[in-house]
Every structure is written in structure tokens, then in C-alpha cells.
Image (cartoon, rainbow over the protein chains, first blue to last red):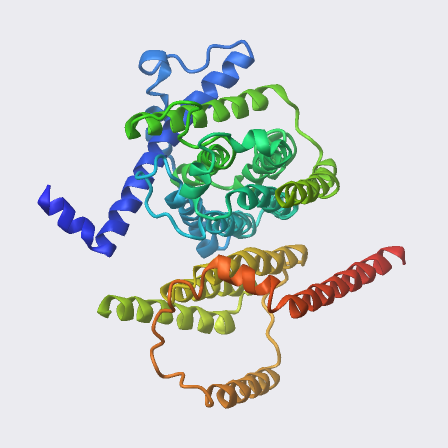
Length: 328
Length: 163
């Protein structure tokens, strides 16, 4: 025990351990999510989903990993080798970055930055860049179209996403993630900020690029969008990054609007608090998967129009109302 | 303290290397990616100076918005080989910039290692309070200028469509 405390006192060592723990934790969740997504969508479509590998098909992610690892790694001749190879790694790294400020409980957090939520917004704005790198590096028209859609989409939805958080920040009076959760001890912000929650939820789905907003990779129009040319582990990393976005975004929804580790009326011991957080997160993820199984895809022009003409005014109205109520 | 300086040199090295890559690489898309690397490294410098708010804004505005816009503009162009500016012109422009920067830098004690600020100096709350009290007039004037620029851009974009 003494050795561990000694190691953890060194900032560099603590950072490294923190990164390892976060990456391992998120990767486990992502593996589970790939299985869960198949099961949920299968149920929505009245199928069984994976049920051969292990109990309930739970070992399917392992089988998938082995399959992807043994696949031939193809780099197209006309591709920009550097960008093509770099893109999956950048995608994975950028996707993990926001996770270090997400508090499972008050103590279970890598670092509680005092610019917490601003940091998350800033690093998530980088998520488009690996997509563009992959799209441009592939030198393929479908990839490029997918990439351009991804940029148009994330540019239009980043603004309502950021604006919808302002109400929460105004109510808390702090950007720190721990403080935001603590401010929701009695009332969750979903009750005080219903409009903000709605805008954030929609914008987050769009930023994740999931159905009904999955324009960057709509398979019926663009083959597979920006990752058309990718195979093997590179493809796996891009896919991984997408699931990490989902984990991070749902965790953010829980932190900002669903009270984080708090339950109404009772105070729980820390381990149960982390469990409560995870349960809330998985409920949101389940709703996302359910939506994916149910709704059709929206056209790209309709989608950007929703972002600019509907969500941004709503988010601004939310800030205005919150301001008036706070000044009251 | 030694840790801090080591980290600083590591970041400074990254910044300079990526800045050199921006101007020497021939593929404009790769240049933009190198520019991104430089912006992120500069944000890291702000973090070592305890200016977390500035670091976050640096990433949000420069890395997140400016580079994405540049990349988007590149994607809208056709890919037809690599093209350079005329070398003489390029050399003159860089020389001019270098002169201006040297003149400016010469007035500051730039060779000294800047210690981190006091925790409060870079805090979001303080910046916010100052923006809306002491500096409220300049702040509003800047928003007005930005608004004018935006309207101008929209007007120019619209005119092209009408033709």
C-alpha cells in the first residue's frame, strides 16, 4: 500500500496510471456496448442477435476482435499514407480525452479541472479532425463526401450544444464537473432546464453521428462514409472511437442533467454512487439504441436546417429564460 | 520546478517543430494538420502557466474552429498536385514577418522563464467579472465589429449566388 501511495504522489506516474485506467475502463464498456447494440437493435427488429459465442452471445466482441486483428490491413495505392494511418490513432486519442474530467463519484475522477465542462467542449470540438483526415487521406469520393457531411454536421450542432450547457453553468456558478453534480443534490437539472436538456440531447446525438443523424456514414448512400477504405485494426479503432463518443456523451448527459451520482432523498456510499452513475448512463444508452432501431435517417439539408433554425434559437431562448429567472 | 522546465522544453520543441512543418511541407492538407499540432502545443503551454481558461479557449477557437474551417475549405477544392507560392515572394514575406516580430520581441524580456501565474489570475470567474465590469465597453465594441464582419461575409456569399 505504501509503495502505491508513493508512486501516486508523483504527478507523471499518476497521470500515466489515470490514462491507463480510463482507457481500460472505457474499452471494456465499448466492448460491452458493441454486444448490447446488436442485441437491442435485434430485439427491436424481432431477431435474436448474437447468441452463439458464449452465454447470450456475450463473447461476440472477443470473436469480433480476433476477426479484425487477423484481417488484411489494406492501404489504397492512391491514399495519403501518413494521414490514412494517423487518422484512426488520432480519432481514438481525441475521443478518450474528455473522459478524464468525468466524475463517477466525487473521488473517482482523474482530475477535476476548474474549467471542467469548457475543457470537455473544447476537446470534443477536435473530434471532427480525424474524420476529415480519414476522409481526405483515403482519396475516395464516398469517403470525401462522408467527411464533408461530418464537418457540416458538427459545425452546425456544436453551437446549440455549447449554448445549451450555458443554462446549467449559470445555475451552478461553476465550470467544475464535480460542482455541477453537487449542485443537483436536491433537484436534477433536467427539471430546471427541460429545454436545455432537449437541445443538448439532440445536439449530442448529432455530434455522435448516430441515427437519425448518421449522415457521415449513411451506408445506403455513401457505402460507409469516411471509413469506406479502412480494414482490420484501423477500422476497429475508428469504430471504437465512435462508441467512445457515445460513452462520453451519455456520461455528460448524466453529469449535466441527470444528477450524476445523486439519487433523490437518499445519500449513498461511494461504491453505490458509481453504480448509480453507470446505471443512469446505460439507461440513456439504451434509449439511444432504441431510437436507432426505430427512426429513419433525416436528409442532410433538413438536418442542418434543424440545427441552425430550430435548435440554436431554442438554446438562446433557454439562456434568456434562465437569465431572467436567476435575476428574479 | 525541474519537472516544469522539462515539460516546457518538450512542449516548446513540439511547437517549433510543428511550426516549421507548417511552412515546409508541400501538401497543404498536411500543413493544416501540423498547424493543428502547433495550436494544441500552445494550449499546453498555457496550461503549464496555470491559464486553464485561455488554454481551453485556444483549443476551442483555434484548433476546433479555425483548423476545421481551413480543412473544410481544402476539401471543397480540387486535388490537382502540389503548388508553391513563388519562392522569392515567399522569402520576402517571411523576412518581413520575422523583422516585425523581432522588433516587438526585442522590447520584452522574452528569454526569461515565466513562472506560472497565481491561481486566481487565470480563473474563469475573474475573467468573466472583468469582462462585464471594467472592460464592458471594449467587449461590446468587439462584439459589434464581429457582427459587422459576419454581416459582410453573409452579404458577399449571397451576392455570388444571385449572379
